[in-house]
Length: 305
Image 1 (cartoon, helix red, strand yellow):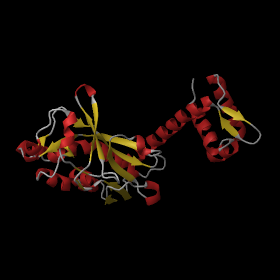
Image 2 (image 1 turned 60 degrees about the horizontal axis):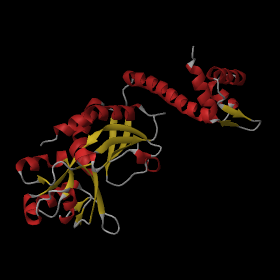
Image 3 (image 1 turned 180 degrees about the horizontal axis):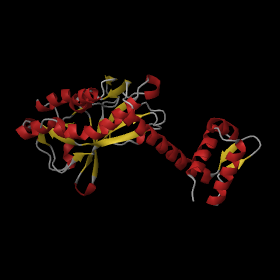
Image 4 (image 1 turned 90 degrees about the vertical axis):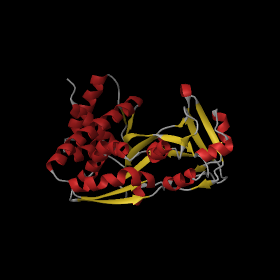
């Protein structure tokens, strides 16, 4: 039968750079560790470590196995911490960053509930659309909405759901320029956007019937790093814009905004939290992440339409 301790021993040997250091960390004799890793290799039928007199190095199989061992170790630690969370009331400060619109519509209304449930926790919320270096700036959790989480690097990602958006304009703007009937005609409408390149250009990725994709290259007449501000501009016919559905549903229902080309929509963004590591995470931060996972989608759906 497989002994999961062997996976822990192997992970520590690799992470500590050798049997002696792992022995000191685990409190297990070096000879026993060496024997257990050798038995593990024999059971798997493959060499995991290349041993020399100076150092250890991983084989290709060893690299793959080590990744799974680390996941197993972190899962075991998380299980212990989960029990500790039940037993112990979290306390301390959770430092969080959040984009402006997400804070105003979703996270802001939720935080009082979290703080009522955990009166010994303090939240330091920094609202900004600027990209944050969590480690350098001492941030515990960064909340983001992006088309993909692939740019999160070495950070751990907790998926909180999808943020859907709509391409909208005012009826007056569509009357002046004509409502597009094909995606290729979108370029004749003026636009407003969150940002543009140094050359003043921006790109919207749109998804249409049959999963067809279209990249709309445009030069916004107005840029602002706040979606609520841009919504005012769209309602007043400055240009068409990509807005989250929860931010323009009321205007769409009232008729002050219209969907520009039904059937075509921006690619949904992934609402997610990123944090440096699960290892050593304090209870307050873990409880905050669990709370977001339980309530963010509920709050997004509860935003007045």
